[in-house]
Image (tube, rainbow, N blue to C red):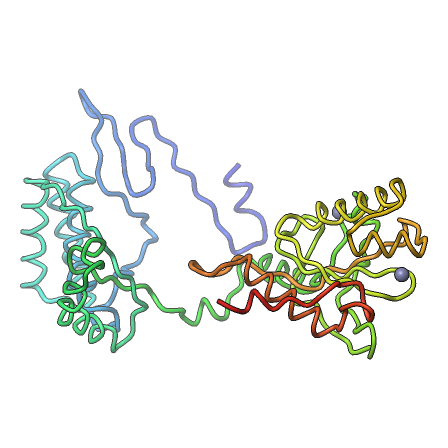
Length: 348
Ligand SMILES: [Zn+2]
Ligand SMILES: [Zn+2]
């Protein structure tokens, strides 16, 4: 099978290792001993020495901790001391080739051996502060450490931030991140999202039969054009909508629940107005008085309040936005169907 594959006219070559005594799994070679399994660190014969070069512009702390981490890996992945020592020697040579200092490697090796022997439990750290690494980040870290007493002297903060944070570094975006798109699906999704921005129908419910699908809408009096900045479906909550009737009057409303529920409310109050012959709801009243059929009720979802930052009152933001649109589109009676423009939400 492997031979057949290798006869194909491609530069790709396949290999297969089949054995009843040993198996390679990740970075381990597991073999059958006389009484138990033995294991050692496994590297593919094709592997090159890709350890981080000491001259690389990475944080010094990272380069200094790398040898110990790798020695620990060799020690942990070896059940036999003989093989372990050979592999430690090989690992040390790899580091020497990559510009690491021999003294530093010796110290790291001793630390790794001691750490393995004692296997002390690590103290749980309560706060980690990640920063994107660049040449000046270590200075930021030292400023934080130096001025930590300002945080400690605060009345409330020390309860949360008991000790100085552990500062760690995140990798910055590199050229590969900027240039290579291995998974383009996300960018397609973003384009798709961009395209469906606006008031969008689900095609499956009564509410959406009243919805006018639109990416823009017009001022009822002066025909000024507005663009809808969000994707709003009948299930979206915290929405401002514009209802319109056949004679061209508009009503601006808001809803904290899904917009389909709010429109259902309008539908039922119009139906009740027809049944009872009267109502105090402004939209239903107008529909009843001018004998507009229920099916002529149309709406566009024009604005939305996304989940705001912590501490912001979403309900109040919605009220403010409703007042803004009533004023902007001039929909207070008799020019529209809104009874009044309330500015209370802007006060207090
Ligand atoms: Zn719907
Ligand atoms: Zn009307």
